[in-house]
Image 1 (cartoon, rainbow over the protein chains, first blue to last red):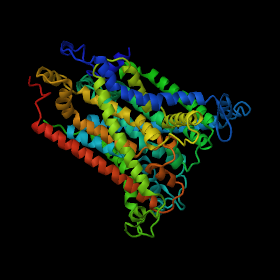
Image 2: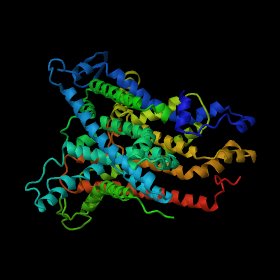
Image 3: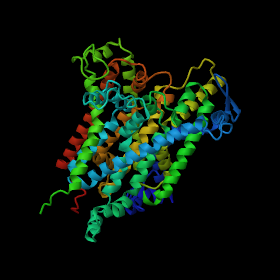
Image 4: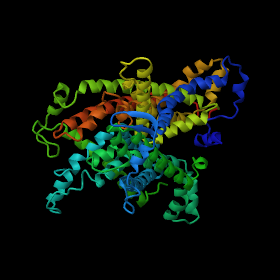
Length: 317
Length: 292
């Protein structure tokens, strides 16, 4: 089954049973060479991703005191996290409020990046006809991705601050008398910065799906009398769906786990799922941090599973 | 024959232009502001033009020890770049045949890309703490830590760069014509010769692209470094630390210097890719042009 998926993700990658290949005897067996080639990368993922994830789960069930880990089974990481959740009903406890806030940010950023990303990708895929221009403009969208995220965050300070360009501009035109305070270090600036940083992750997969759409399908739709809007809804969006889902998964998982953008742009005042983990680590409460990481991982996984229900990724990738 | 462009073209072209302005506008603002005069503040208008703040950074009298963090980030970036290129090309080659554990590696890479960075970072930090504790308990009581730039730090960065490298390799071999290799084999080339003289020259521009991703993603990496880098800081971590305390254009100057390195690397890489593509077009074969 997984080979089928791969074959669909990367058509033509795995050439049939390679008739010419089999004819020539080699000294090293093919599977040994494959291991040699793929083994090092597998080892890196094993040592720095898979085993660490296992440790996160294990440590989440350990005990702790003020300054160290105590390797004995304990549910304290979790009970501390959910403290007051039942006692305070029907009010939300801290963790509940935090996740509600994170999901809210997530939804706003997702909706905006999807809208912007879709139309940017649409323009590049369908309106830019020359390959050179397509390459050039795609590159223009990619270059900021290769530069520092923190710099792209602090870049908003001279624009949105109390004495920033936006406020002084608005004051000059007489629209406002006092500087607007909610522009910086607020939910608004967090969403703005996240959209600024991560729309790229929406543009790339949607663009990839769109360029694969056979242009004659669109012509056929027009010939059959469809309006531009009908073509968009009935032809282009369904065919671009895999890209939309992949882009959405990227953006949602990034925002769910984000603590840097929310920290810097929220003036360290906005609580979020990723920030709880950071706070717990800084307080050296590793089991509590790990418990929060497990919860975050579970919720992220749940969202991805729900999204891949909408579109059967395995089939459409 | 040429039809006029539809109205939607102009609407979307304006939308696209606005997006590009949104992407670059704020960045350009801080590059300009880092050239504030000595009395200048954090916002416009400019209070004179000088290289005061950038010079201050290099004198080491500023807020961070720029030199040391700069060298650390550069070293780590270069190591990450080399390892990413080598491992991605090797694994990419492996994916052209079927092999056991193929799907495990594929899903590991995708998961590594998707699992929130803070979780990966926390996991690596826990792993190294536990290793440290084991060493202290069983071998050496005075052992400090195995965490560091080129151990846990390198590993953390690779979990971020390798998935990109692998996905780029998939894209390359999707377009690769396997008949070229068959031809080389028929002419008696060994597998290594086929790779060295046929495959590698063809894929080289994209391999440089992998290097570009490897270096720039590491150079700017923050979330995964945050818990896993050990006692020392990289440049982006220093920069992030400054965001809460700084009141003068130091921070913009530092941002400009970091970006200058990024843009130098991007220009070098794209320039090399361009030259290689041109050479391939001029001297290259007629491969893929259907002249069989």
